[in-house]
Amino acid sequence: MKAPIRVAVTGAAGNIGYALLWRIASGDCFGADQPVILQLLEVTPALDRLRGTILELEDSAFPLLAGIVGTDDPQVAFAGVHAAFLVGSRPRTKDMDRADLVRANGPIFVGQGAAIGAVADPNVKVLVVGNPCNTNALIARANAKNLPSRQFTAMTRLDQNRAEAQLALRLGTTVSALRNVFVWGNHADTMYPDVSQATVDGKALGPLLDAAWLKGDFIQTVATRGKAIIVARGASSAASAASAAVDHMRDWVRGTGDRIVSMALPSEGWYGIPEGLVFSFPCRVDAKGAIQVIEGLPLDDFGRARLQLNVDDLDAERKAVADLL
Ligand code: NAX
Image (cartoon, rainbow, N blue to C red; front, side, top):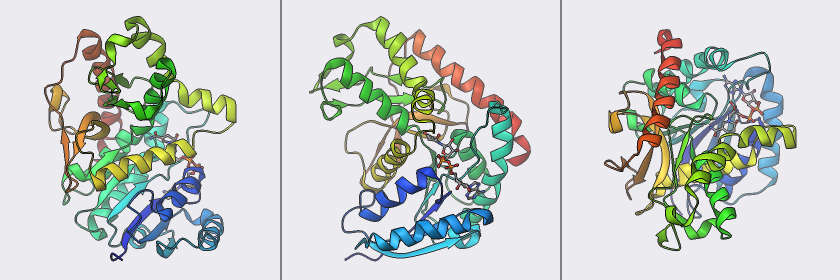
């Protein structure tokens, strides 16, 4: 058996946490031979709820679960961690617009970024799920400048998974037949699901589908899926978000081979995206866990315009949190 790795999850007593912790503890994320120590962070008023979650984790008797820490102190939660899922943040309420949400949640990621920079393993892999996740990742990264920027990512995998599901339904197949669907930009309704590299059973997917549907209903359905779930369920997506977080981290830790996946990370100028903006790109991950953005893929005028919408929003968010960077 391998030595245990330490994994931090923030917002661990919340809805996504309740689905995510079980997937991590069962081995779905880091592998069936990789024990984990869970280091769970919550705000002080939620510590009782967190204790309940921990009792249930204990009762699940996972063979790979080598220890559990529950705390309201980021210095304890991030100590020595190899992977960190930053899920905890306050959800958007009816009276808030996106700018309010950035201002409300941004400060959380100042303290957490600094704690990660100070006490986490130097090779820690950070995945930000809490919204607005791209800009929260930007803030966390800015407060941990001792670590390489490619160790900070935000989650657009749920958008990718939603896109794959819609494509599979349209084609009358299953997602297992699909490869290389990915998403550009921000985790927001401006994101752009790109099928230019996608295949179904090894054949190019684009020509099999109506271009008007791809540019219209397809993008619209993926972009508004979060709202559709809130309307239908009375609560925001939780299990599917946890599943996407597992997909993202599993691919980062174990590699993608030649598959293309979506990961949002601080731009190094790829595709003309301003440096530092946390933007979702087509990526591969090598066997050592290094992320490579795939450069030189074609973008038509429609795609370029979609990317610019995302740049405009992320730029505005970056300006709104300039004092936190
Ligand atoms: P919940 O409100 O159920 O849980 C959030 C938890 O975070 C709560 O238990 C709260 O006490 C805790 N928390 C708040 N501030 C904290 C802090 N400073 N440190 C530690 N914990 C803190 O929300 P949930 O449904 O779990 O969603 C969590 C976040 O994920 C939200 O911001 C949500 O918008 C975001 N999402 C992101 C998605 C993505 O694709 N990137 C999709 C799903 C989800 O909407």
